[in-house]
Amino acid sequence: MTITPLCTPPQATEIAARRAKAQAAMAQAGLDALVVFNPDNVFYLTNFANMVHERPFVLVLPAKGDPVFVMPRLEEPHVRTRSVGTLNFAPYFEFPAPKGEGWDAQLKAVLHGHKRLGIEYDCPQFVCANLEGRNIVSEIIEDLRAIKSPWEISRHQYASDMMMHGMNALLEQCKPGVIAMSAYSAASGAMTQKMFTDLPSANIFSTKLQAGAQPQPITHDPHNFTDMFIPFSEAGPHVALSAGMTNGYGAEVERTFFLGHVPEVAKRPFDVMMEARSLAFELAVPGAIMHDVDAAVNKLLRDAGYGDCLLHRTGHGFGVTAHEAPFLAEGDHREIQSGMVFSIEPGIYLPDIGGFRHSDTVLITDTGNLNMTPWPDTLNALTLPI
Image 1 (cartoon, one colour):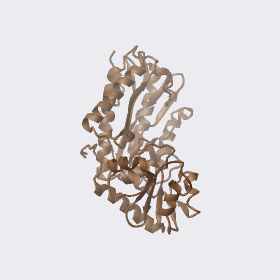
Image 2 (image 1 turned 60 degrees about the horizontal axis):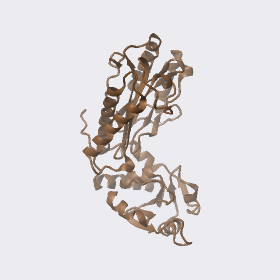
Image 3 (image 1 turned 90 degrees about the vertical axis):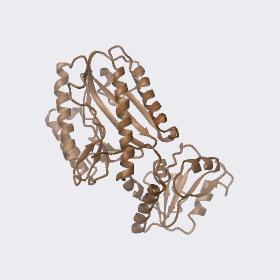
Image 4 (image 1 turned 45 degrees about the vertical axis):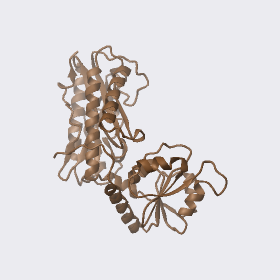
């Protein structure tokens, strides 16, 4: 399966198809309108990425017709520049504002006559308070985001290629004595330069490119980047991460690597991690249940004696962010479907030895799955010369 990578904004037809699917789901749910506050959902329906601050942005998608954007008048030129697809506008001057002139008055006017309003599960209370009890929680947009269109898959492939570009730049920097900050700066800079060379108009509000590596002393704590001045040393395990968003679509690739040689105590946990990873790839196919994939992977790790060394699920979704639902996690009982994009990243974390985790961006296909970040993953390939 060959995927052509793309980094450009969507065509109006792509946005129109999303809105039409949302409105069809709204009709089934008997909703008169969706009140969309989550910036990621706003982006999904408009291609406009806003910086969250005290001035509210609220998108109203009616059961029929085009969305109405309640937003600061200050941002209207910005919205018109970045948005894709037809939008109606209900701007307000400023926040706070005199009574009757603020965002809440505009929202109430837009929603006049609507009786059943769908809201996101994370819609803020200050928005809900202005809906007069007409709101019910609906995850219509989140459900739509889980299944990628062919165009979105091309965007994820570009993001995946970018993360591999970052991984290459990162591992070139990782030598004994080099501090983590130096490697991070060089690799993240290389990714940013490529992004804005490929697409000078890329949106900085929906682009976040980071490539960094954890030296061995902190790899047992997977999100510990509190000291970027630790130098890399011989052996390992060290963990390299290249992750983020490219003009609105996310991906990641991560690898456990060694410098010069592999300590004997690191060989078994590395091998067991690879067995868990292989099992996850085997099980993450259309029709499988997400819970079952994670449960099987966790059982393998527990049976190998690493039950006390597990810190996270097998994987998470990608989309217009780099970290979102659905999840390859015990407790998520949804069915895996073609068009979903997950990370696959089972890990083992040993405080006295280090962390062991590879991560890849994986597309669920009609017949199985496709690794969109096929970076070398064997112990031999990841034992780097010094």
